[in-house]
Image (tube, rainbow, N blue to C red; front, side, top):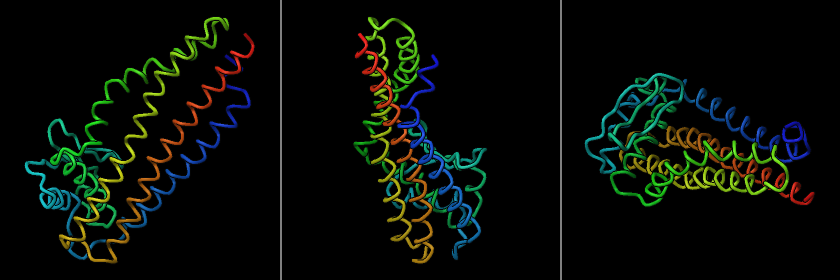
Amino acid sequence: MGFYYFDYTYFLFIVPALIVTMYAQFKVKSTFSKYSRISTIRNMTGAQAADSVARFGGAVGVQIQRIQGNLTDNFDPRDNTIRLSDDVYSSTSISAVGVAAHEAGHAIQHAHDYFPNKIRAALVPVTNFGSSLGMPLVIIGLILPVKYNFVVYLGIALFSLAVLFQLVTLPVEFNASMRAIRALDESGIMYPDELEGAKKVLKAAAMTYLAASFAAIMSLLRLIVLAGNRRGKD
């Protein structure tokens, strides 16, 4: 077990991923905090903005609910509901309106059967399966003798499903933000200078998805290298 956690591959693949992830988290929190202190001229709350953007984009029957937590905002296609965190639901800040509009962007995708969104939804069950079994199989395979290296590769194959899910998530999230910004602009919910702030908030949020994808890819590469090193000893 020791070589798995303390070897050069950790510093080559995992440390860079951790640095990128930490920077992305810092960026989204600092940007959200900055624009949380600036209210929109129209004084529209996040909940109102989400409802307006969804209707503007043609998504009907969307429910808006409050959810506890910090930046736990999400859209659930199963019940066509946008759930907004405490810092977004009743806030009139640029950050709140931008985040709420982003979730409304997902509702619009759902209403218009956005194809990448369908692919992402289809990958959820296989991703959950791969995520739950992939890494345990890799660890077990690394403990077993080298002749059982196929167990490691099976784990890597399952883990790669989670990486694929992260990559498919990127266009879905970027498209939701594009729809949000377009709706905020064309509907007149935000003025141009406010819109620039919302764009910065959503760009910072997008960095977290890029960081997650980068981290997943780096983890996968590390597992491949570890398996390859063992194979060379066979």
